[in-house]
Image 1 (cartoon, rainbow, N blue to C red):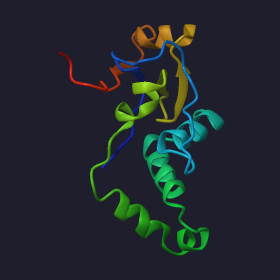
Image 2 (cartoon, one colour):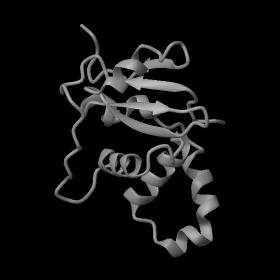
Image 3 (cartoon, helix red, strand yellow):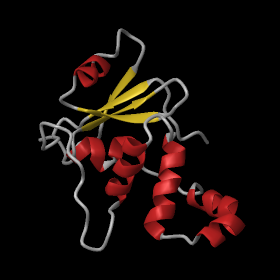
Image 4 (spheres, one colour):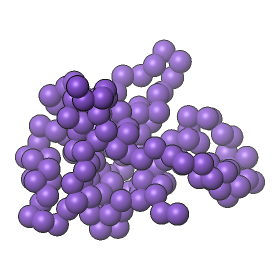
Length: 142
């Protein structure tokens, strides 16, 4: 099964509570999943596919030892993807923190702040070259 998007832009949720892209705050106990997502994508734009990011966030959030990953990495990955996963439309980055997510033709992603001219261009479909999807709402529409 392919978990990736190609030539797609995920806009912020219609009920996103912010007006600019903000860095997710850390939890007292360490990094949150959305904090790890932000760190990885912003630190390496167009490096990760959605599938690669989902797995890397899982590995970091669970603090898997490198030795275990070296020995059982394929098995851990297969087990992780054996169950349905929420896609980036359900991520807090576009839902709560004001980040659009652009996937290029190779399926690699970058964060686009909602206040940027690039966001406006992508949200309009970039002259018909992008599929545009909204992030999932935070609450049901009334």
